[in-house]
Each structure stands twice: as C-alpha cells, then as structure tokens.
Length: 304
Ligand SMILES: Nc1nc2c(c(=O)[nH]1)N[C@H]1C(S)=C(S)[C@@H](COP(=O)(O)O)O[C@H]1N2
Ligand SMILES: [Mo]
Image (tube, rainbow, N blue to C red; front, side, top):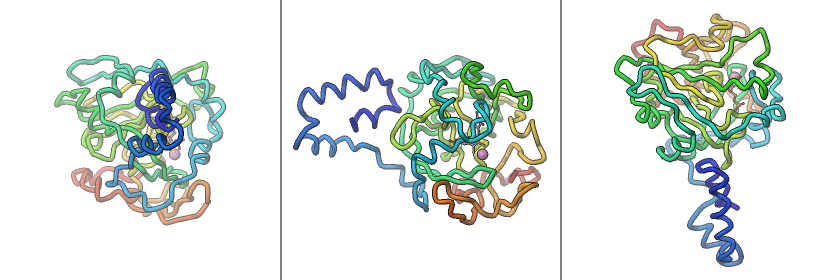
C-alpha cells in the first residue's frame, strides 16, 4: 500500500495496482519482509533539503478542505463540487513562441521529468498561510521540454474550463479562463514548481489536480490550478485578478509585509489549522532564491 501511495502521483493508478498485487503475492508485504521493503522503498521520498519550511506542516485535512477555487465557488468550501473534475485523461497544450507547438499528455510529460518532494510555505493575499509537502518537478524542466524561442519573455498558464463540473464559470463577475503568468527568468528560477502531488498522494482536484503550479515567494493567486495550457509570449499577459481589480492585485505579486493591500495590512499571516498569527516575511522568506530577479525591475509594482 505504501508503494502504491508513493508512486500514485507519478504513474496512472492502473499501473500501480498490479505491482502492489505482485508484491503481495510474493508474501513480501507481511512479517519480516515488510521491513525490508519499507527500507528499500520509503513511503515518501525525502523532501528536497534545500527548501527549509521553518515551521510545522499544516495538517492535511485543512490544506485539502479550505480552498480558493473560484471556478467552483467563492466560499473556500469547494471539496464536494471539485470531485466532479475528471483528472484523466488530461492534456496540456504547449504553444506560442516555442519551437514546436503541440499538445502533451500528462502521463507522457511525467515520464520526461524528474519528480521530487518539496515542503513550501504558501501565503494567500488574504493573509492565511499553510505549509505543504508538494510533489512535482521544477518548471525549469518543462521549459527545456517546451523549447521557447529567444523572443519569448513571459510564460502564461491557463486553467481548465469544465462548464459542467465548475458552476462558478457561469458567474458574470469574472472573466474566464483563470490566467496567470511569469516573466521567463522567474519561470526558470529553481523555486518555480509544477505540482502533481501533496502529502504523498496525487494532488486532489480542489487543490488544482492533476497539475498546478506553486510559486512560494508570490501571493497564492499566482499559483494557477488544473493547468491545461501553457503559452510563451513576448507581451506580458493581463492576469485573472489583475484584469478584475488592478489596483489591488498586480502581475508581480511578490510577498512583502511592508506593502499593505489597499484594504488590509500584509504584516502578519494566520496559519491554517492552528490560527496562530505570525509575522510575514519579505518574499515569504525566499529572498535568497529570488530577490536578485527584480534588480532591473525597480520601476514596476513588484509587491502587489
Ligand atoms: N484556477 C484557479 N487557480 C487558483 C485559484 C482559483 O480560484 N482558480 N485561487 C488561487 C488562490 S487565491 C490561492 S490562495 C491558491 C489556493 O490554493 P489551495 O486551495 O491549494 O490552498 O490557489 C490559487 N489558484
Ligand atoms: Mo489566495
């Protein structure tokens, strides 16, 4: 069972089951044999030690039940509705300024990348925060696969629009699809992470399964969920929240405790689960990785 769980985010369920069954047949899952298997194949890979969480993990039940996913609804309680979003088959269209625009199946993509676990802090612009063990692969690997042209300056992510599963798409207040983006040098930064799992399981639909992004130094709205399209552009895209309210939500959206949102302070954050309030850090504590990115962008509104 541990083996099936460990590999669930990497390979389709259909390929997990026979392997687990085979191990069972050999009797290796019981008694002394179980110990040696556990030793050879730990239930969870060691998280990448480069990314130090600095605080306790958020309990899984909170991270997977308190969600912002406006395509379903705007209540944070989307779990039940989100189960209607099918996670396979799933394809991602790669387009725009790249060598060969094409559509790639998620399972083919996963065979071409190196996956790992990373524990990241997540800071929502609304001031709640969580600490989550994500499974996935660096966006830099996907850039290599996509082969952007020299003229590509921005990467643009689009979320799936399933009108049957997602009642929020019918709301007249929003301009769908959910679009997010990064400058290409940000996208190449080691911190930018494509997520396929969390807490040792496939990432559930409410958290943006089967493929989302995690950008821990930016406010959470930059981390687009359930991605079906990645395009490369010369021009900066207008992103979802920026298009709705540019005075409050910008393109760069780097975390900064000293730059308040127009309607509230960003100095502190509330930890999901415990409700403890802790000081917010510049770049959400990831300055050592990303502060240098914006040397040439001082005239931009980098922090909202
Ligand atoms: N497609 C899509 N992506 C989205 C959102 C959304 O509403 N739709 N909400 C964003 C916001 S505001 C946050 S804080 C995170 C929340 O991720 P979580 O539910 O996994 O905590 O997803 C981001 N990605
Ligand atoms: Mo958010």
